[in-house]
Image (tube, rainbow, N blue to C red; front, side, top):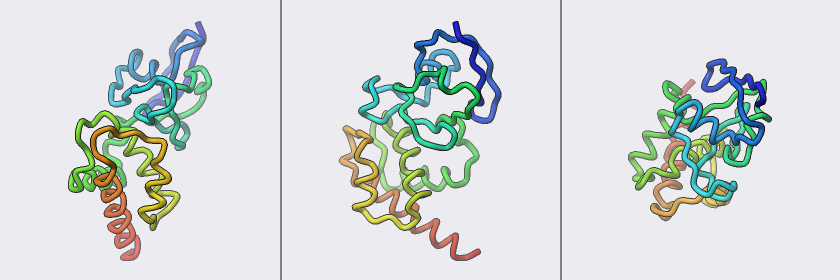
Length: 160
């Protein structure tokens, strides 16, 4: 067993884990934060995307032991985040969600895109989302949601 101390959604956590435990298994099985979905279990689909020190990572291919001393944010940790609330609203309004399996990871990537590209083009969004797999929506609603969110946030930023 390996001792691990990290911050999950703002809360300090200390526990013993097997050295081979993935971050996704720690999040889902040990911490019961099931909003993080595991699709492929080898980093190809993006469903398990979480933030590690503010950077999106595929939690199924990150060893939990590597997160010792770091901060992890799961989709549950975004409750109360005004930025994510606007993004979630646009996902809803643009019909960017069907089965919902990819949605938590997709939201994290969408937020990351908007933080790095405040005025993204459709081409930029599609390129940046290329590692996130959605088998239901065809991506049109997802792209529309991100564009609408960017427009709203740009207007809000301009008012201040």
